[in-house]
Image 1 (cartoon, rainbow, N blue to C red):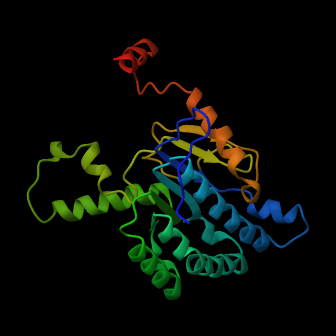
Image 2: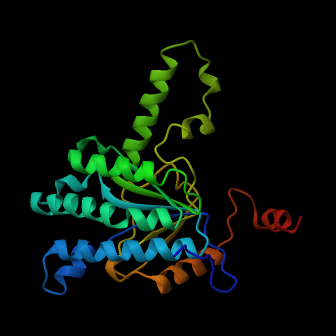
Image 3: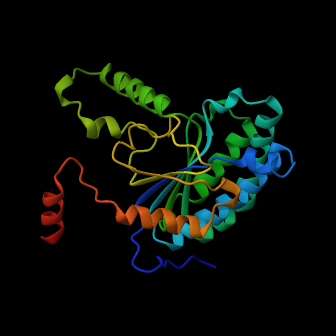
Length: 250
């Protein structure tokens, strides 16, 4: 059944929401379980949050699923995550299509197992024409990597023909990033208060909300709390409060 949009009360949803999904391992360990069970439960939270974000009017959702630093984790846990990723794509593809969620993976997928690379490509092709919400799964992604690969892309393109270096501006640079739109609100779950190399360029003016809720327990009420915080913020982008109010009243 297609998702119907309904933002609670008078809350305005952020256009682009980014979430650092933290706390799966601690959730499992606090229950005497293996860390992988926390990741499995975290996958249920992903499904829940995608649905709620689409209902509440979020236009773009970026989830930090696996960082370029996460390869340092125990091999058994990394392998379990790769398997879970494949299973989740197979299980959720139909729902994402039916609910109009255009899905792509942002990051260097070349290090992933071939079976996972193939599943990613199939999912991206399947949902390419969806237009209710854009979902970015950041996997083998790092903000510094994103900036570096944008620089490489620009250098490669400029090496083929003469160019005026002064013509390189923020807009042209942004076009070469894996994720091109600015983040309005970034949420981190699990009680930590850092952005951990996530969307460094795109989050330049993002509002930051840190939740103590471990990711597997994160749901609608947590989103409402974060959106309430977002609605309370005055986003000035370098202007004074008086200038913002005057602009809003025009």
